[in-house]
Amino acid sequence: MNLNQIHNVYFVGIGGIGMSALARYFMAANKNVAGYDKTKTEITDALENLGAKIHFIDDLNDISAQYFNNHGTLIIYTPAVSKDHGELNYFFDNGFKVLKRSEVLGLITKNTICLAIAGTHGKTTTTSILGHLLYECDIEMTAFLGGISENYDSNLIQNGNKVTVVEADEFDRSFLTLSPDYACITSMDADHLDIYGSAEHLKESFIAFSKKLKPEGKLFIKKGLPLNGITYAIEEEADYIAHNIKIENGTYVFDVKTPTQNIQNLKFNLPGRHNLSNALIALAMAVEFGCSPNSLSNALASYKGVKRRFTYQIKTDDLIFIDDYAHHPEEIKAVYQAVREMYPNQKVLAIFQPHLFSRTKDFADEFASSLEKFDSILLLEIYPARELPIEGVNSQWLLDKINNSNKKLISKSEIVNEINKSDIKIILTIGAGDIGDEVKNIKENLSVAS
Image (cartoon, rainbow, N blue to C red):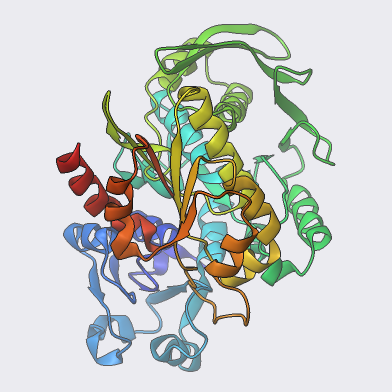
């Protein structure tokens, strides 16, 4: 398909973080953009402000006439949309070009130098760091992010089209539509078992992704993963090593040993060894791409992060409120490590909303183990997303597994009251569901309380 011949782009599920980045891309390319989403959000508001026509009821009558021209219109959908969605089925049944988001990313990146970030954790942060590094090094590039960059207040970073930086998403095996020039794999922990069935099948999919590299492509892997490539690690032997690590006023200061040199006194402002690892692999890919160490040093120091990735909402002497997207036990462990590193002698209250019945069922014991390390835990009901309930799988069942006496199951409406009843001054909200929608209200009420 030649995207230059497309004039109208219609999105079914336009409010998704990956879908909205594509919508921004096509609007920047002067295409007509419209779409449906189930819920009005800050993301859809931002797209409407840019000129997208969006509606929130599954109704063909709400779609402008120009989008019914099936020769000049491309329909893009996300697998998260129900298979019985009326608009989507109409387009399938009436000769339209209908593609998944991942297939469109494959088309966009096909004739570019593509740098792809894969892994069950760290994709969004690593992609946004790499996109920022290349942008600051004045590379003609476009980066599609799975979160909102604090530096650009957008999930699209754009400075040209010769190079693309993308998240290679393992969900639904979407990353197999890509053929990157540079690719990294940050982790291969079991996840999405509702799709893969087993951890072994997930691993096989990552191996298949590694084979999608172009013939002269470079594969970067976190040391310890069962693949061959350029390795990276923190304070252990690898091709790229972060070492001499210090924390100065909440900022990492460290050196990086590359295969040919030692880059000294790098600064990085995100807490947590997991984020330092993300910075290291982004830096390694940018070095191999050809960026100068001096430019990369300045760019890394100016990186601000991604919204809902260890984002400080309140940071005073009396109260710390941090919000994070973590929704897998390994990610919760990483958040715990980061907050303990920053605040080693203080108690921490964690408010967690599990995401998906299937993930909660598959990793219940691991969730319990990662959560019980916090000093106090408030648990919300499971956010179902695309799933129907599973009998016997609920937050009370998970709560019973947590070996910590300071735990409680609450509703979203009780969050602020429960925090204010506590004497703990470091507050975390954690989860990938609609707990993020509560952050503004929590922040406003805690700000008044503090």
